[in-house]
Length: 213
Image (cartoon, rainbow, N blue to C red; front, side, top):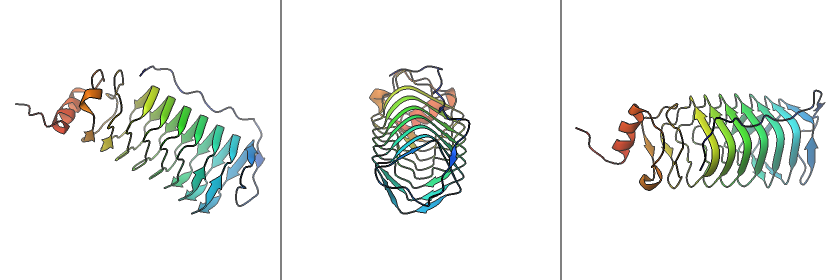
């Protein structure tokens, strides 16, 4: 496990993108250099799609399942991705800015050079996710599951982590001190070497049922 101040690489996008005109996405298709705006989708499955160099802006997706999809150089801006499933998908150089991701599930996904900025991710899931160069900044991450995460180069700053479950995740060399939480779940044997604030120390001791007098 490694911790560094190096930030995730930003998506690489062309200066001019092609406006996407369709109301859905086909199975096993590539969508490159697209500007996808104001698109509503609800309770549908998108299979084996490849999104590259594209910009999602103000889309409204609810309970959408992305099945075996790849995202490379993609920017999600002010999007609602409520209760969407990204289980097992791959992300490289992807940014989520100001997005609503409540209940989104990234379990077993591969995230490399991904940024979440000022997003609402309450009740999201990152169980068994593989993380490489991922940043969470100024996000609401209440009641999020980060169980058994395989991470390197993960940074978190200014986030609300209240109620997080980090069972099975090795926190050695991880800096939690620039975030806030009043309760959380940890694996005691994997907490050694983490950096926490003095206030967080009391929360952790309480979680571990250690009495301080």
